[in-house]
Image (tube, rainbow, N blue to C red; front, side, top):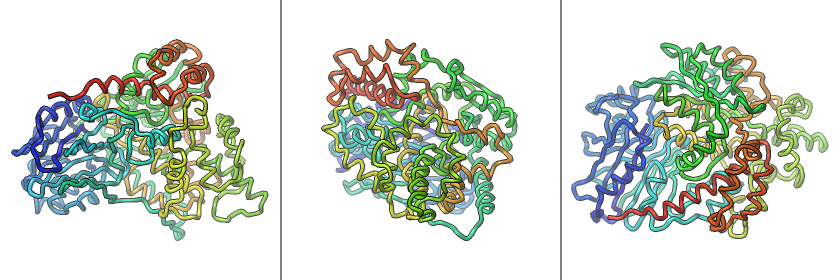
Length: 634
């Protein structure tokens, strides 16, 4: 786990001040690698790489980067390749290893397999390999976008880095990308590889970036295919899932530094903690962020149940409104751009606690998108069940449950009545894509606060439909279409948060449920097994019913790190929010209606998604305004 950056001349001309530029890039990534820094510059100064090190595997200097291979290629790598011992054994006849690091296995794999090396890797990564003979950069991002990679073509040079903030001093100007902003305002994340800043692009997950002969191109190397397996039983899928998950945990525990786990009190993090504790040499350190003084938001009792079952060392931090006011500017700065929901704040606090005890933390990210854990899936199916009951069209392929079977699951929607009211207010029984778009569309909450005229919202809905109705998703189940969209777009946003909030504290976050073998298996499971009877995560629950404590397995109130933002903004943080939007600076935001925004903070829904979206957007704008005055000068 590290920070990587580099500059490549696309026209073959030397880059003025290359070494100084690399130092600026690396300096802005220092938090990602507190254990060391390294730089490499080609003799003709047409290519340079920078690295900040967080030492996890092979803590010696042999694992330092940039790393040069015996073939002369130079690599910078951020992440972990968990199958590196097995891959090393395969490559040893054709490569003389000088370290025990997983990074060197990438160098060796590229030497032997070329660009196909990426298909031999199991883990999380973002890396860039410079071939001085071919004058070719080959960069890659892992299958799910766990690790970040941003790039910009500035003049005749390609700049890349682990975080946007490293690129900002070199951008000719810092201006907003209206198309990406329209996506953010709709979903609180972007759908494409574009960022909120013009000229800065994020390499999409499961893609490689090739820069050669003066051109830069992206190539997809992997995708998940929803080819349903009707030959096997639910019990068979449970057995396969159990074996793959336990094996993934085994690999994710590989480390030369201490490993712990996040523990929210939900099924996914509890499962990861419990399985990890069974394979750990000693007691596992687990970490929980609590809201002890806010009824309805405190999940610490469930986290303690899981910690007790795991015989783990339990660590807890009580998170307050004062913490929010103290740290929110750092949270947004580390996020690089506003994204996802308010859960990034408690995640930042919990990561800070974990970093005091371990260098690696396992998390449960991915379970909701792979196995169907969001309450909105039940909301969507409930509507379809009503329609089918009226039309008499059960089992037409668009859904997998009956109204009789889904009724017992409806109590989990108690806290979502405002969402259901909005969802059913208009367009009931429309096409499936239109209905799910209504469920995930956040812009309806901000009709008054945002000036919408300049944003291409029609393009956003078209992009949504492209993914929702994608060719690799069959027409058989509504469930697969919903989870596929969330897997492709929401999950990368959540992984963005996972990476930034942990790396803000020099902590490596690992997500064992996002092993591609697990994802590929889950994509073959028919929806009537994954979502049996309208029960969320049913396959995962059935596979591990003897592992997860009943209090967690059977709970119906898990909300995904809820944050009492609306309570705070009506109380302790009323002045904070008012001050943020009161000044003349708020009027400088061309798409914001400040008066309507101030009104939003005196009301607000229980979980504060609107408040979060507006607050993070304004803090980010102010930070970008400051960055526009902080340009790189020779």
